Image 1 (spheres, helix red, strand yellow):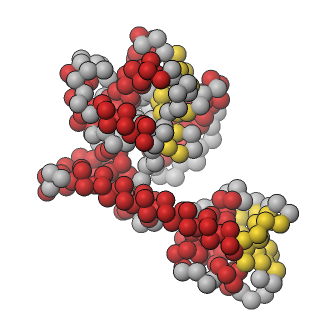
Image 2 (cartoon, one colour):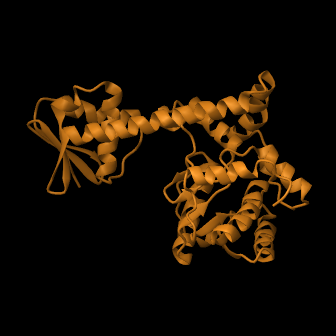
Image 3 (tube, one colour):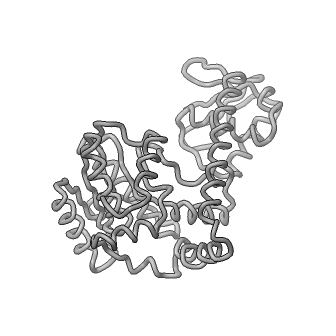
Amino acid sequence: MHSFPHLNQIYSFIATHELIPQGSKVIVGLSGGPDSVFLLHFLVTFAKQHKITLIAAHLDHEWRPESGQDAKFCQDLAQSLGILCVTRKISDLGLSLKFNGSKEAIARQARRHFFAMAKKETDADLIALAHHAQDQQETFFIRMMRGATLTGLTGIKPRQDGYVRPLLQTNKQDILNYLHTNNIAYLTDSTNASDAYLRNRIRMHVLPALQKCDTRFDANFLSTMTRLQETEQFLQELTAHIFEQIAQLDNCAWHLEVDKLFTMHTIMQYRLVLYWLCQENVQFPTTESFFDEILRFLHTPDSGTHAIYPTWSLVKKNNLVWIKK
């Protein structure tokens, strides 16, 4: 790759977060848009230097008349770079996705399923996505508007659940500049200009206004996000440490000492309950009312069982509480 002054920053970001170990087999989510096209081109160069195997993966959402042409564009691009391209139509996945009012959320669920399937089929190690610095900014403001906790405000993670995002600190304009300078074709999604989507409204109206208010916005936002993530990491480690002091493993279930839980600050109580549920690997809604219901039950002096979720219950006896699946 040439004419990209921030290339070393991407290499440094990958190394710092240990995103792509040498010898990995990596699926690259390829929509055909500028971000994923740039990521694929970058990783082609990276793969040669680090003995990485690349596989492109494209999901045809079938929502636009030109979606079939988009799929062919991705297949042709991958072929020109000597890379296998796995493609599927969303109707081929056999999914039963419940519409919750957000078309974006449905698409995200479908892509997750598709990427997981492609990863299993190809025996890949990682899935690389092209989220960049402005995606991080948009996500922050979306979550802030929806009343997110500190955990939510820490945004998109560089590496999580088998996904890696090498471009998280790369600006969109730098991506476009590289593609234009090198005459690399990409697709443009007409829906990206629609005010119907909250993310688009933030991208087109909120972020430009902030950048106009202060040219240091992008750099300062990145600095703030880094501090938030460091704070969240510290609290996660502290939660794990405290959990070991107030819980004991008995018959493959974690038993929580209720009185010790309630000596903690309310914020830590929520974090400990969340950590406990994750340790038990049970499904649960991440709503404040759900955690309030658990704490109310634990506050009651009597022993008993409380069916708090369809597939599991809380059992409290004396000062101990555990999960019965």
